[in-house]
Length: 107
Ligand SMILES: [Mg+2]
Image (cartoon, rainbow, N blue to C red; front, side, top):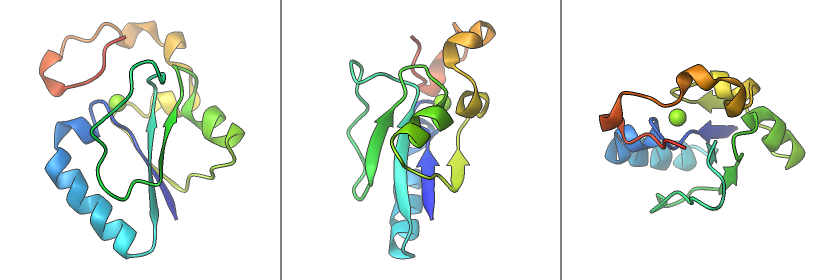
């Protein structure tokens, strides 16, 4: 199973807990990808061990980008799931955000 784990506002909310999750799912034979709305110009990191790869969507819908890269995602984990199917720029009401303490990336 391929799992897409969002970075900003998801992984960043509790990296220690997510590292445990990632270890557990990798041990069970699954693959965990970081799929982020960020572009490669603002890379994520430091990456947890065992991540299969990072897919930078550059504000394009995450599903479009993973499809284009031939990565079939079976489970999405995302604090803002609207970005799985919609371009981030098409949802301006979510930016800028006022929850500054959550570690979320703010374009
Ligand atoms: Mg997020």
